[in-house]
Length: 149
Image (cartoon, rainbow, N blue to C red; front, side, top):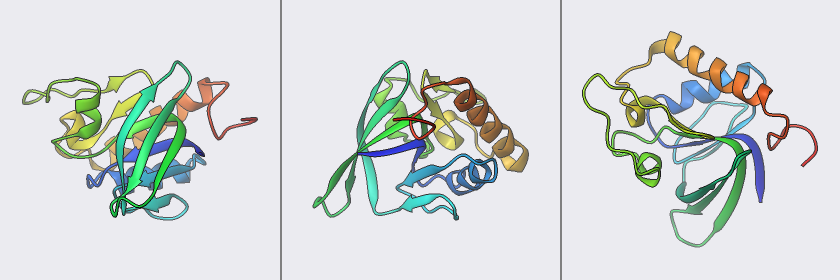
């Protein structure tokens, strides 16, 4: 099992800048289904195929596109940054956002970019989202990847 504070699912254009902003604030993350700058761990050839939500974390199930490998990822926060037809949003059983509406997710699962209904967050929006995630992690005493596992 991979343990990381933040798992970002998706290839939305916001995924890489969000991973960079989190990395700059000292928050390690794993990006599946998209590219990300260092120090983030990017696995563009992997996709999320399910997750379970708990009070303190999310256990996500990811698989390689070739179907040969599967892995579990335990993260304090899962960010669905996987486009307008968001798989993460579908797993949460949330309707697509109406025009002008922004959906944030539920509990330890956040939505960002087109998955949340935000057409273009811009650099200020990315920085604000990264700061909110970092603050949420700082408030969680038992965040995976932070302190004893």
